[in-house]
Image (cartoon, rainbow over all chains, first blue to last red):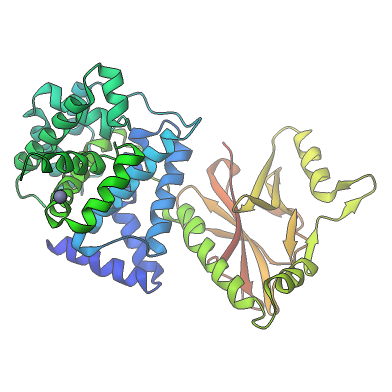
Length: 185
Length: 231
Ligand SMILES: [Zn+2]
């Protein structure tokens, strides 16, 4: 684990003991990333806010984090994604219109947060590069699932691809991305 | 990995993207219980998914400030804990509920079934530049704040008397920064019109907290109701 990840794990342990200040630090660190992710999937800012609130409420209530499963940040983002997707699949909650994949690849290069987020920027740059190295058809199924919030069955319906193809392409894309990203954990 | 295992590998990837159907999800969960290979693969997929999240930052839209989030997270749980410890241990749940109900002041009824709350709300709605902010606990409205002419007034919908030695306090939460105390001490019957600490347009929310009596609060201790200011 990187020093930052160890620090996060220590913070989370303090949160487990009811330390509110530790939760606030985690929120200052990752609340923005969680909110951006929720906003990328959900059209309504208020619903995105609700999602982030649920994520940190779950954190405060000490539900679900397993240190053997990886970094706290990874966990927070995966809970956020899960709840955001849940929200758009619920009746009446609107999905954000999915940007074209090209736009998605470009945003990371231009959309920079505050100046001190150099690590975040580096991470986005590397992810964008890694995505660019994927074959277009792999990128498509990946982005439809992750940012579109569609199930693989829905993606099969939308694209006219057999479900098995959607599944195998997704797996290939995830493996390839993992290789391309290397060891930036 | 065997050919048949490739199917589990596909499910693990789909799961990391939250893209499986419920039945597949359940099947995978069972398999993960007994397969370390797939658990390890899933950790990798979740890491990749978290990297994808980094591309979401394009909107430069500020996340809600902690002060606004806090009430829904800490306030919520702190209040539930407080409610648990207040409950008389030897009483059954029904009896305990009766105690709470007895202490509850539901907005006083005026004449033909119009409560003070309803009257205040309809009077406000009839005026220009008057805002009604509903303060709730969960889905339950506890009070409304009537904002008019640079003042805020708390009108109870359904509030019990504060526990002994405690009072209510009304807070204004700015879009960015710390909550500001508007009125304290308050009882369950509400407040008079009090000057706002900052313009309504810069308000994220109003909140009611429970505070120890006798000392002026500097930050909300236990938030019991909160309502977002509409823009
Ligand atoms: Zn397996």
